[in-house]
Image (cartoon, rainbow, N blue to C red):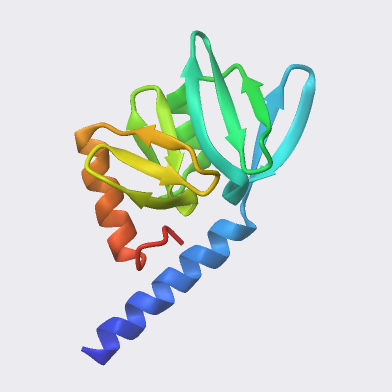
Length: 130
């Protein structure tokens, strides 16, 4: 029992440290820049572009598919909330039956399937997505 708890705590700590140190390179227009993954609130697809919403209220437009962005992020802390929306679990501060509430007070409607994944991920991480 104790060994299982310790193993789980070590895995959570390892994920937290490795995810925090990872950066995410993006090209927006002619500029190439780096974002820390924990700065990303969510990413939405709008027409043929994606908009990355950050914790400092930036909206960065990129010309990549939502699936390509999800693959490049490559983190279990991000979930496809819909076919057109990726949510950063580290930014989720609560949820109800159909929505998640983000640290910036935004409310995001989530598909039923994604909500199951989000609930499970938050419960496994102690409820805070970290």
